[in-house]
Length: 187
Image (cartoon, rainbow, N blue to C red; front, side, top):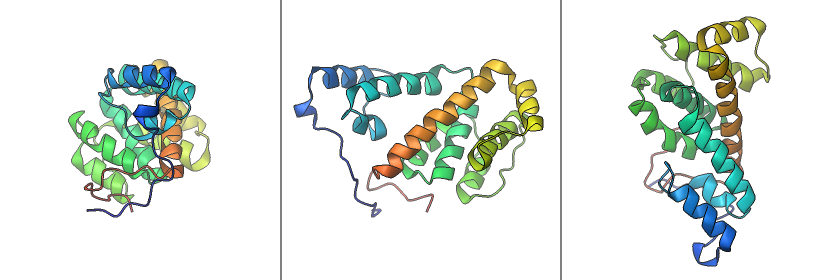
């Protein structure tokens, strides 16, 4: 059992939901996520934020032009950078299922250089790291990413990075942790 820090803000009690909270909860739970957990649950304190964020998140995670393997790589890169344990816990299994290699995932977790055998994976990771470390992307890397990914996937990559920044901030500020029986992987 992991001793996670105390969560600062619990999700609202479903028994106290108003009509809008109930409607948004049902929309999230009936979608591809299959439930309302983590930041989405806490955002229900502000139902309109929850509604809009879940729509953006649904697009970024399930409907973007990025293949799940590349999207999950970007998400795990964000989780590692932010030290967002819940995000790592929630996205490591889908990353493995999408075909991201265990060696790449372990290198991300350990903060070492991932052993990419795929050029698109290398570019997505370098692009994400550049954004995180410098808040910019050098011209040469941008040109390489645009040539390799194309405009649609490049725009969606930036959207995924932005959305998972919001996720990471929410998780860290409100100390939303994985379940108690989850292993701590990023600290």
